[in-house]
Length: 480
Image 1 (cartoon, rainbow, N blue to C red):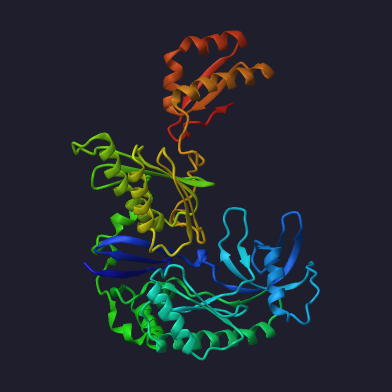
Image 2 (image 1 turned 60 degrees about the vertical axis):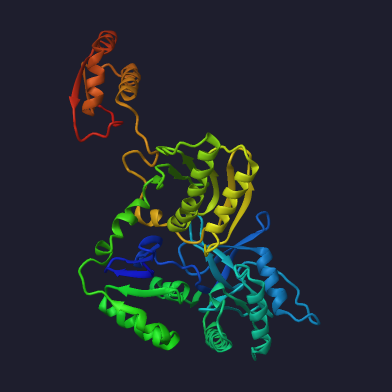
């Protein structure tokens, strides 16, 4: 099956699924209350300067203040000044600064800001405060890089801005690149007028919503079709594409059924994103455990049945796991520090091959990443850029039952703890009777050793009434 983009629109959310041969490769959610601010440009006001952190907090009109490194403010001012007339730099509270959001708020942290402004088009990114032309490192073909540089040397581009050639520009014509450059330059000139009119804190430019981002970043020539299940969204997409991508309009289809994702058998694949275990075709599996500071991926041979030597078994499983681990990182949009624990391999050549398989599988990843290497124990350490909230963060909340621990105390543990708490409570008070309300499994454990409870009653000269309440949390204790 060819590559497809499916867009499901509901009143509460928009979902985008990118399929390759019917398999889910990328998945995104956007809700009105959780709409991303990454890419937005603000005229901000410096709220506080913290030299000890080398950073400043910037008011951009949102609840949480943005975080901006002072070095970025300095470099922005240096770029704005001419070499002949350097401007004395004094960063202080109340100063206005033009910033762009490069990373979402996470937990108590505010959004990460940058003064290096960039507006993304389909093939180019315009850098209003930059100079010259740079080419994406993802374009590795030397011949193509040379062709693109030659094309840009022939284009008449404005001298007061810079451009970065995106990966999607590979193979594109001079006309297509020039059209993108002209559109982005006109957009920036319009924004300059807005900047001069607004007072900080103010929103200057709002990034595209999820649908338009998917069109800009993922609707490439190798996509056979884009299917959307909302009539109003279908017409909105058509209007947008007739302006910028008219040659792709014919690939956009309106789905007239009732359940696009269900009928395409996508819901089952989406549900697996939230599971910690990912099974491979060989019956081996990955265990994916995201924590606050890092992500751990453990490779297990599981039910791998082929009659191979231990070294060959480990190599075969690890190669398959490397491909799936790369896919899961993109699919779940996992970021930060990532450690992948592959099965131990003795041969250095096998370890190198597994590492190369992982790198090759990540070559199409849009996020920035850095792989340190693979140790003799089969550990791969890497980092991956974390920009947006993950699908799991948007869809799940910490369990109110276990408070996010992932485990609750066993009935035996709670029963022991209850008797300790009862003794402490009775030391200060000596009532004739006490009501002890607990979960039924905990009461069952206490009644298995009635002598302990009777000893407490005898010592404190009180009667303990056990009240069973199925609605009680297993760790809940009520002493009345």
